[in-house]
Length: 381
Image 1 (cartoon, rainbow, N blue to C red):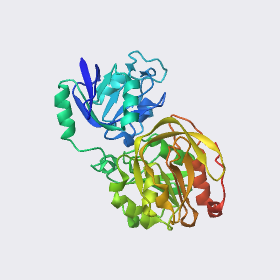
Image 2 (spheres, rainbow, N blue to C red):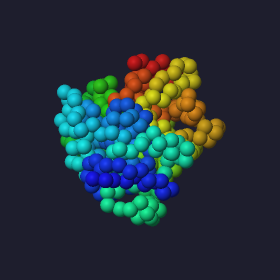
Image 3 (cartoon, rainbow, N blue to C red):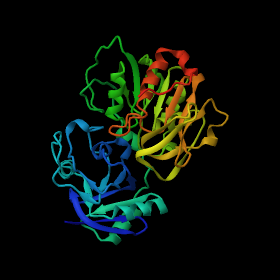
Image 4 (cartoon, rainbow, N blue to C red):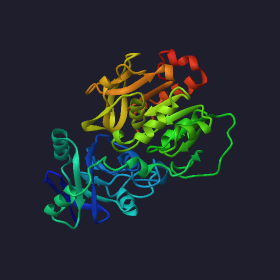
């Protein structure tokens, strides 16, 4: 079946339908990772976005139920150059095409993804739509009549509605009965778009993850008597998440805080900072980041379209601790007097480069040994 991808400026790409026939609408973005398509497609941070993979062939190792980052499919649609119809991997349970159809996802293959990526890098990311039953003119009209990406509260769409405790084998987002882990650190994980791999990393380091809704107040968080608070990644424009900022502001100085991706931006806003939208974002597993305290450079996995304005941090209790070597944007903040720090990239990187995985260990060590907030702590792989 034929399908078209239409950008809001009227650019049209033709191809073949993959997944379910129909229509998909979202901000069109690109991801440069060579692997991890299942994790990306189930990552809540891609909510409201049509995901384009720059790697030529996608789907060669299939999909399985164990590698979901969240229970539902999250991306608004999928664009690829070539879809592999016969996956080969001992862990594969179904093909990517079957996975798309089973989740009602609209996608398109046969697109010149190099040309599309160049378009987005030059003009910037923009709204677009995939369709199997409309003319290009009708699609453009539908795009222009729809809300822009980030205008809706996407975090509220992906966050858990009720608190829950997590244990191994449990997917992020599913509630369960309370489990008593007296010897584990109580870590409240604020769910702005939780990835299962984050909770898994915390558990492996002796933590007891307690996931709370994005609209939980500081008082509700502190009632859990947390040893620490993790601010998760998530989708959308951070400028519109005032309720989350107020919660983080109310927690500063009252519990150790570690923010990841959107969590980094929430910490910045809570400290008085601001963010700005990147032209085409950072999405992929090959982004170099320098730690300004140690001089160490690591390759990181990233997925974000907004960045912290470094000038807005000046005069606050935080300093910029890490920068992106491609464009010198902020990749980390440190506020030791408030026992808070954050990173813009994904330390869990599942799958992806493991250079930054030791940051979870840093968080745990800083909770157990408060004097370490003032130290330069090399990451342990």
